[in-house]
Image (cartoon, rainbow, N blue to C red; front, side):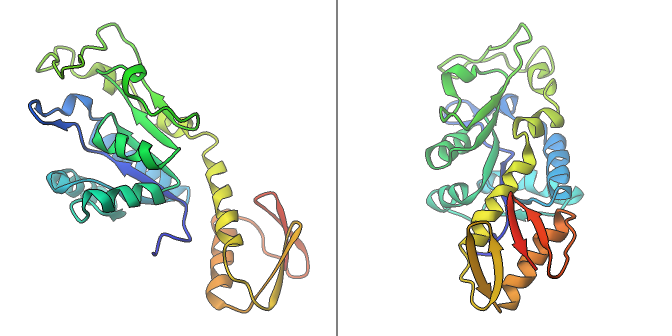
Length: 238
């Protein structure tokens, strides 16, 4: 419930553990890069939610040593994880089970591919994107889950993908903040007047006022009384 008023980026840094194949880290983007991604997202004012299963606690611990964020890893059932993925404004994940769960309930999924071919497995919604670099040796993972083990090239296909590319795949990432407009419009305003374009709302609720101030401050927008502030393509009277 604390995430209702935030723009949430779901991060599934794990997965890729198949029955009969075991722990397949070849399909997982480097944890250090996920840490860097989380740091940059938080610097931009986004809330980050980690999602994963009980077997992913070790990676959660690695992340927590460097940066703090909200985590549901190992705390939810499959259905609860799916509900959280649906709640996220965008999901970033490896080619994994969580990717398929996310794509079943969320239209904005950024998937990271390496040894597998995205044309076979990537989410199909037009607002979803995948990142994949064909470097000569990939795809090397066949439909039956067979692949070279260990990778003779040091996971070059995954290592070649950098954090900026993932960020740019959400580009313009600040456009995600447009969703805050919808979150604000869903609030039950009462008395004080705020002019949202063609809509007019009223509120005396201190939590609502603090929330709006928080948005303005995070986006470095100046607050002026009795003047109009440009915010998310809408004018607001203060």
